[in-house]
Length: 292
Picture 1 (cartoon, one colour):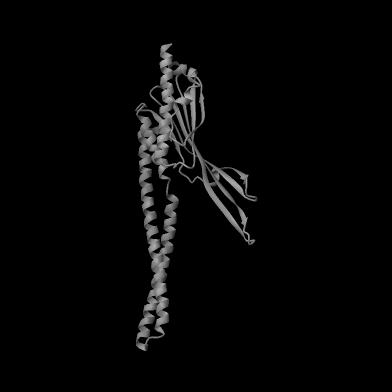
Picture 2 (cartoon, rainbow, N blue to C red):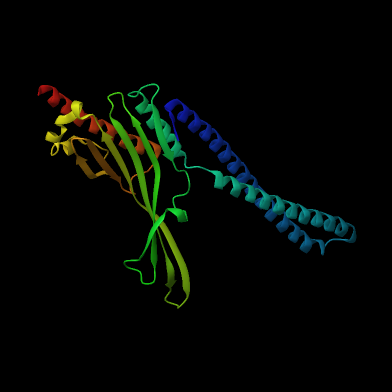
């Protein structure tokens, strides 16, 4: 969507409210299902114990014992039905559950960038909250490098793209691209039994930042081409995958490995440092331009 930052933030907050409500319902029905399963097992176990004990009771107690046994079986049946219902409802709400860090991160980035933008400026935001492993995000399938008969599905999840313009007329494009893979195939044990195995894992997250700036203001940046990468300060474990500087724009791509938590805080810190690093280069270029 393309709109003012305030309007997009408002929509994101409404989304967060709905997501929290969905998570609460998921927890509620999950708890109910667990309690009912425990209740059903307990009732049925006690009922069977009573069935054994009733045979050794006197005639007067046998009738009472049989009634209690039947009641416990009905309770167990009722708990089972409720547990199934609660499980179905929980499954429904779990499908509606959204990845919190994605919309929360988008809101924080917009609020950060808004400080250096015109109040009436509009921003274009594409935010994908669908599962990373869905079929539409699969880009290729390759043979497993070490396991015969196994294959690997590669998934690319471009879940955020943000475009806008700062007060100095510099345009920015921020994108995230997440790579994941699923390995699968039949494995034969020593005893000769075959079992289907599948394993999914993250491969890396690329964050790309493009800045296109007015040549008159930052024209001297081409002089800094070799030194520009030294100005990049990013969190530990992240790596500069690519950096390209021209007299019209600058592109920085940073890779976050799977060993880093891809949560709201680490992503926000990385993206913030990317913006600050590139603007450090631009400010130096502006000073050189003025010196000329």
